[in-house]
Amino acid sequence: MGVNLRDLFTRKEIKITDLSGKTIVIDGYNILYQFLTTIRTSDGALLTDSKGNVTSHLIGLFSRTSNFLQKGIKIVFVFDGEPPELKRQVLRKRKEAKIEAQKRFEEAKKEENIEEMKKYAARTARLTKDMVEEAKKLLTLMGVPWVQAPSEGEPQAAFMVKQGTGWAVSSQDYDSLLYGTPRLIQNLSIAGRRKKLKSLGTITVQPELIELKPNLEKLEINQDQLILLAMIVGTDYNPGGIKGLGPKKALKLVKEIKDPKKLFEEVKWNEHCEAEWEVVYNLFKKMPVQEKYSINFTKLQKEELIDFLVNKHDFNTERVKNTINELSKQQEKKAQKSLGDF
Image (tube, rainbow, N blue to C red; front, side, top):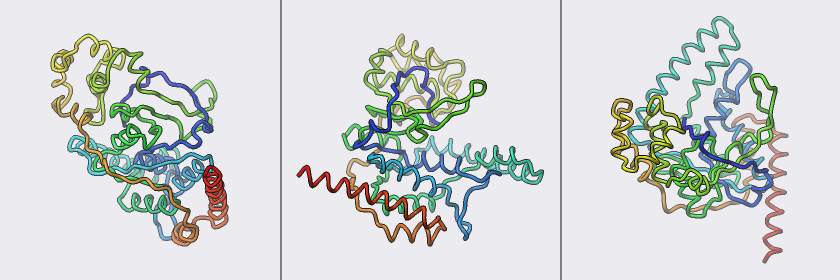
């Protein structure tokens, strides 16, 4: 879900080619949920292999990752660990919403209402442990590194960029900025696609770069005040935030009231949010991350990759082999370039 800070941040449009040679850190759960939501049949059903195993997430991951690699972009995935208790409460509510959406989907199915089926099917997306493990295996076979976070993925991704392991975090959410990532890229996964508007036809969606430091300077606040602002607007740990206070009003308040305790008394935090504000604040300040991790870009495992995708999950043989050939060419170019530099 994330926090809505779009109206406050300035951004600049970039090209995919601008990212060639750079390492981008991606929240694995975030992107897998995108695939489970969007890669479906015309009636909203997930794609599966002949054994009934869901493959939507693998199709999306293989295609997207291959596309990045062919463009010379180095990518590292981060996967969520155990969520904090406040997030567990939110997840339980989301689960209830998914169960309700499943009921609506079954009703639409009985009525053969394709549009309603598509509508509610997307809301039933569930990412299982088996799906995550298969995603990790696919990445390993492709030579793409991944890191297991002890808790939430976005603070881990932000930490890695702050450490210099990555150049930017890629996410549609703004949460990684609250954890201090110097750079955030949005629309990377839908770069170049056409986005429909309600009354104005379509527009071309391009990647956008948000830099934290210039934005904090423009807003005239510091990192801690950004967190306080986000809490007022609403985060994953206090969904909905303070009713009636959007980003601009919240910004005005955090600049006027420097003391956090007085700030949350002023906005009547306890009337709107169940958790204590200090608990939510500390989740952003002290979220555990894996400080010791290794990032190794390894060689493509061709035969194992074909066996995993084609033999196990019924992917199209020709398409998989063609993609592998293109990736192999890319790796060979990199190897030759490295030897030339040496």
